[in-house]
Picture 1 (cartoon, one colour):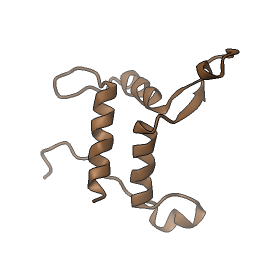
Picture 2 (cartoon, rainbow, N blue to C red):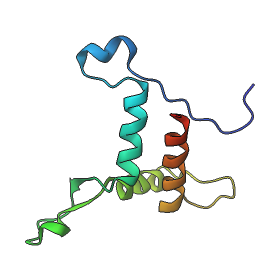
Picture 3 (cartoon, rainbow, N blue to C red):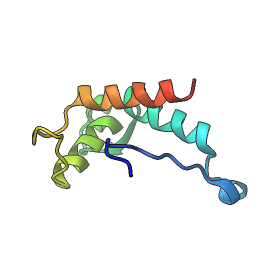
Length: 94
């Protein structure tokens, strides 16, 4: 029985043929989503292009908060927690 919080990342396997990533590519994509400062959600109809999108990492934090996901100490996750998670995933590749 696993007693420590564990994240399993499973690649596409047989679904790779239809475009889903395999394990290593999936880990890389998750890392890039969190630390690569990718932007992917239209925030407002602002004339300033920099205000139109927010970082995917910020969106992930919003989703975790809405889901009431909390750390062991009952506090909500912060951007630093996501960065640590991404680094741990990256280290798992080596």
